[in-house]
Length: 121
Picture 1 (spheres, rainbow, N blue to C red):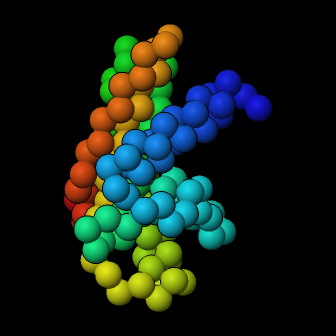
Picture 2 (picture 1 turned 30 degrees about the vertical axis):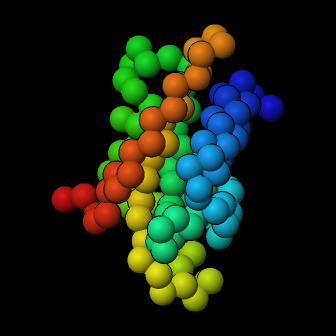
């Protein structure tokens, strides 16, 4: 497995652990339907929360969350719509980003709640 894939998996596991400590119930991890993908789907405070995890080993080129661009947001929104329909959920939804920066033995996790909720203009 490529090093960046290993880093991504490690970041996602740290994100899951972080969310569970905060009382989130994880419904799915790495959910896929065709080309659509969501890193983490969780329940929290009566909402279905779709979480994009961005992991980096350096922030020299920007913080991890800065790499969630408009095209990625559009894909996440489309995937979330498919997920809600497939599971026949009618709950409110929220879109979060978890930024994981792993440098040497230090792990910095930032949870950005309500990171986006509409298509960018």
